[in-house]
Image 1: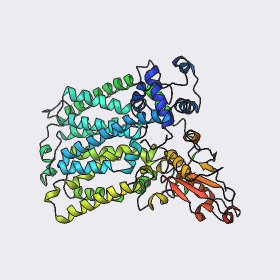
Image 2: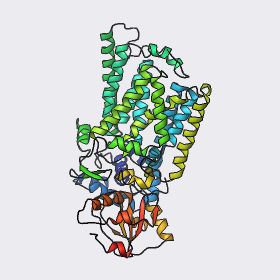
Image 3: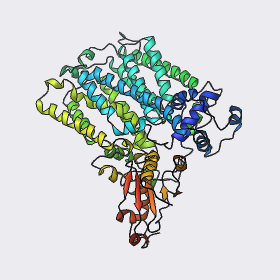
Image 4: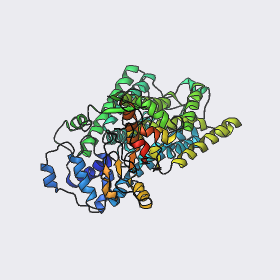
Length: 539
C-alpha cells in the first residue's frame, strides 16, 4: 500500500471525499456516489490538509470537464501527497478486511469451518482483490456493501423481524451510496424474495440426498418470506414479500439521502447516475486481444476474468459446479443467494459497462469464492485423492500470489502467458494504473537515465515522484532516437504494439523485435533503442 503511487481514480476520489465531509457539498466527481470517498477521507480530518479552494469559492465554481482532476492534483501535490494517500487508503483496506470476514462467515455457515477457511484463502490470495483493495476506489467497497446487504437479506428471509428488515434497508442504502451499479441489487432482492414467497420455505427435498456441515442446520429453515410465516396462501405470501421489499427500498432511500447530506433535489441520485460516463470519450477505442473497437465487446469481461484469475481458482470453481450437480448443495434459497447475484452482476457489467478492467467484476468474487468453497465441506471424510487435490490447488494458488507480489494488479495466469503476455490480451487497469511510479523512481536512482521518454496513463504528474521525463501519449506510438531510453507503461505497450501492427506503412514492429532492458513493478517496460531498429521502417 505504501509502496504504490497514486492511481488514476484516486486523484479525484480522495480530494472529492474530503471536500464532501468538510463542506457538505457533493459537487466534485458526481459520477460516483460519495460513500467510499467519504469513508476514505475521514482520516484526513486529523491531518489538516489545505484544500486549493475555500468552501465558498468551491460552491461558486462552474464545473467543466477535467476540473476535478485539476483540483485533485492541486490538493494532493501541493502538500505531502504520500502521507494523505496512505491514510486515505486505510479505510479501503478495512473494507476489504470486513469483506474477507463476511466471506468466511457466510461460507462457514454453509459448508462448515473447512469451507470457511477455503473461502478465506481464495479471497485473501486473489491478486485482483489484493491489488484493488488498497486503492481509494469503489469496486471493493461496493463488493463489501453488496455482500453485506445480501447476507442481511438472507438472514431476514430465514427469520423475519423488524430489526433484520431495518438492517437490510440500511445495508442496501450503503451499497447504493457506494456505486451506482448497486442498483442491480434491487431486482436481485425482489427476485429472491419472490422465489422465497412462491415456494414458501427455504429448503427443498434435494437436501435430503446429502447433507454437509452447515447445511444440516438449514434443512429445516423457517418460512422464507418476510413476516408471513404460517401464511398458506401463495398470493398473500407474494404480497407480503412485495410489501417488505418496498419497505427495504424506502429505508435504503433514506440512507442514500443521508449519505448525500439530504439534498433538496428529489432527483439527486438520478442526476448522478446520468453523469456516470460523462468523463469517458464516446469515440474511445477499447482494446482486447490486439484489436480496437469503439463500444467494446460483450465477451470482454468473460475473457478478462478467465485470464486474470489464477488457474487453481478456476479449477476449484469448476469442481464445485460438478459437486453441485452431483447433489452437494445447501438449501435452494442459499444456492440462489450465491448464483443469482454473481450472474446478475456479471451479466450487467458485460452488457453495460465500459471495457476498462476486470475490477468491475469484483462484486461477483465473494459469491464465486463461497460457491467454490463447498468442495472443502466435510473434507476430512473425503477420499484421499480429493484431499490431496485441494491441498495442491491451494498451495499453487498461494504460490501464484507470492510470485507476483507486491505487483498484484499486473497478474495474468498461464493461459495468457503470465504478466508479460497480459499486454496481448488487455490494457488499462488490467495491466497498469499508474501505481508503479515509486518503484520507477527507485529504479532510476540505481540506473540513471537522461532525457528519457515516458508513456503512462497520464493521470498523475511523474515529476512529483522526482521523475523528470518527456511524456508521450499512449495512442501515438513513436520511435525514439538510437540510444534514447523509452519507458512504457504496460498499457502503452499493449496499445502501441497493436497500433504499429495495424499500420500498413510499417514493415517492422519494434515492440515485437526489441526486448525490454528491464520491467519495473511488472508494469513499466524499460527500452533502450538500438540503432538497427530505430532507423528502419518506423514512424
